[in-house]
Image (tube, rainbow, N blue to C red; front, top):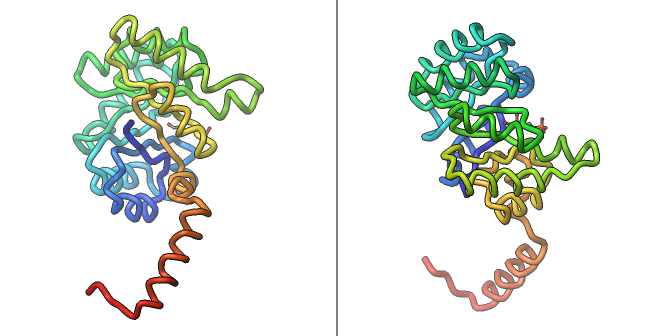
Length: 217
Ligand code: E4P
């Protein structure tokens, strides 16, 4: 499973990219607003740090505007992916952009019917929002499972990008259900490294090692 960072925080993206584990980045207008940066500058900077797909979201609501915005954003760097909302206009824009060989991430997907349409529209990625479904008492992970099952039956090439991840277990479950990618907030990625028994075990090893008086280097 590929790991994307769900962030527009340049410092965090830079730091976590040094792990060598980051395959891409997703942003959205809320994350850009939170970063306080100019949108184009932020995407340009993230693309220079990350050697992988970087999603930049359009803000128009009609096909023509979304296509124009997508064409402009796609010129920022070769690894820019255009993010469009899962509306009829968004999927029309997706079809146009993907016909122009521009990679598209269809976002705000909340059911499998929408995911079928996105695949038919040539989406490179579909982004089902797990956490926001769980927030309203629905089952976000069931959606991942349904989309993976359907895409496999029809051999759709669209990759399933598990989004709106709220915790480490969402990452694990997304992997179990066959999502191609999880886009993970930076704090949750950091949590994935942690287990109290790892810390406890390491403390014990280091304390016993100190007693030997030895040094490896
Ligand atoms: C990523 O592409 C989405 O925009 C993001 O995961 C949404 O997450 P949220 O529901 O925590 O805002």
